Amino acid sequence: MIAVVKYNAGNIRSVMNALHRLGADATVTDDPVLLRKADKVIFPGVGEASSAMRYLRDRGLDEVLKNLNQPFLGICLGLQLMCKHSEEGDTDCLGIFTENVKRFPSGKVNVPHMGWNNCNELKGPLFEVSTPSPLRGTPPFKGESLLSERTLDQGASSPPSERRGVPQGRGGYFENSDFYFVHSYYAELGSQTTAKCEYILPFSAALQKDNFHAVQFHPEKSADVGQKLIKNFLEL
Amino acid sequence: MLKKRIIPCLDIKDGRTVKGVNFVDIRDAGDPVELAKAYVEQGADELVFLDITATVEGRKTFAELVEHIAEEINIPFTVGGGISSVSDVDILLAAGADKVSINSSAVRRPVLISELANEFGNQCVVVAIDAGIVEGNWRVFTHGGRTATDIDVFAWAKEAEHRGAGELLVTSMQHDGTKGGFAIELLKELDAITSIPIIASGGAGSAQHFVDVFQKARVDAALAASIFHFGEVPIPELKNELRTKGIPVR
Image 1 (cartoon, chains in turn blue, orange):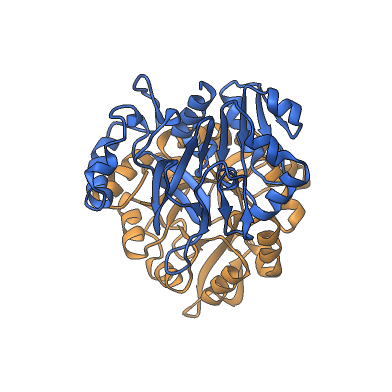
Image 2: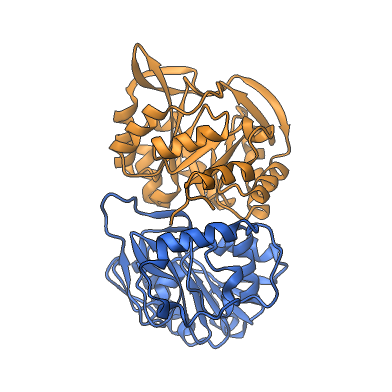
């Protein structure tokens, strides 16, 4: 059974729809017993950090969540709440990750960061594919744009050593894939970063520590690549 | 790099897809969910569903349709048409929509924009502006483009932004249905005076029109209906063309 954490932050329905499309048995719950018992836990979220943390603390869910041992996936606000501290409402978060959450600087570029953006330097099991999948959404011609975009956006600025840790061919399916983002706050890059994205500045598109996984984008809204990522999580 | 978005728009009446030319002529173009799924497979980045039903029964059908769309579709979608209150939006977002688009009701009662932004967040409030030229000036039109107001389009765009709109969906009445290209100058000026994403709408007839609107008006997204519905500009070919011209697309 997959438990989806019920709290005062939205988009639970989209996550449930995505799980149903994959045929998963999922329940929305805030019952600590069910959360501990579940095979996997998903922590979704669209909302505001301080009120969400207050809600979790009032119910003792903060302690429950950070002590879970099964595969755990935070999405969007979920990722931010798993970090150490968020600038949104000056909030101390769950502290599963050591990274901090900051607001995108306002200026000429639109905030929130909304739309499809590519992720790079992918690491960890969420982004691994054992066999190349012919799923639609990453057509073969992507390979061409991948090369030119990397050269333009990334290649020149990031030294080769930075990319040495990325297992070749494993994150291949997802490397440079576009995911759907909607957020005004971002987690900084750090030792637990497992995917990078760039908007105004480079930030953590995904983080992982042991059984705790988190993505800033919305896999449930990211077409086939997102669905594949959720499937990877369900197969952990 | 953030990608430019291609958004097919589906007009819905009594749960079925229809097509509008200059918002008047209507033709049945199929089942919304099937059409939506086809667009997702083609690489559409988002979808917009506009309910043009006038009856109470039709509105109920629309909410049920939204639920069905949310179950089947794994990309973001916006719904609009006849939304005038927080409770209208509550129903549609609860049914699974990601964003709502408001138009005439926001012109009538601009505070609606702030109410929705406060309740649901800016990112799910799209303010649709129908713009038409009246005596040489761009004015806001309401009621599906049938009623002219004396409101200046540029002033209204800024007000919508200040009140909390997350995006502006701008349709030029002059260009809509003509297939002669988007209203580049209007969109360019709107982009210059606002700092929220602009979705260009009205006038798409060829892939080159999309290239132009992204390169010249620098909008974030472009929306079209009939050219997608009737396969005149297939989305995969459109995206290849945009990619060839150096415009970032998914």
